[in-house]
Length: 249
Image: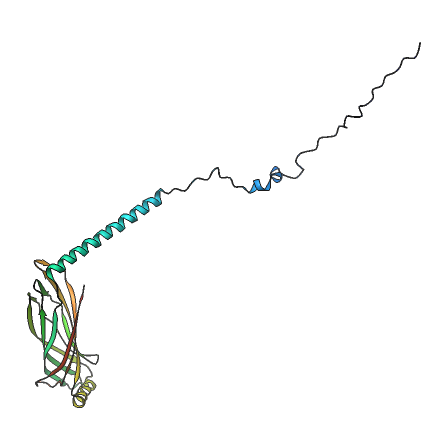
């Protein structure tokens, strides 16, 4: 009997050799390193909330209301002022210096200069429906080249409609070391015959519109005048006089 044939298994040549599996992520690297760079740069908007605009809207509304109220008040005040102007037709008062008398201007033994003046101060109220209350606390001064010669005050009184009031204001003053000033006055009187003076007045007043009395305010008057002399107890001629006036609340 023929020998039995031995059958040995032959490996499959066509099948690929089995190798150990290759890891998908290299050693020492992270998974995020292998992502697409474009995907890494994209921010995550999933947790971003829109800003709240409610507070800004409230602020804008408050500002608009405030501006509207201010504009309305300005319009109302303008209407009241316009009506008052048409009803009362206010005019500024007028002031002038109409006379000056020197009762004393002499040097004492200690070289102090004593001066006493009487000033004729005229106040005119040209308004038909406005009165003026002249309150206390006023002062009026006379100056020569920046030096105050004397000082006085305007008395309290009420000036009615279309009224002219003439006040004789006594004024006095004393200047220490006045010998130089006295010499300058005498030289200017002899050389030019003109002595420039400045009169300044500050007066608290209250304006009366019909039956309404306004709060107190102040007016100031400046009068530039030129006299021919400052000789005591002699007639003094005022060659020029110019007064300016303004109110101060």
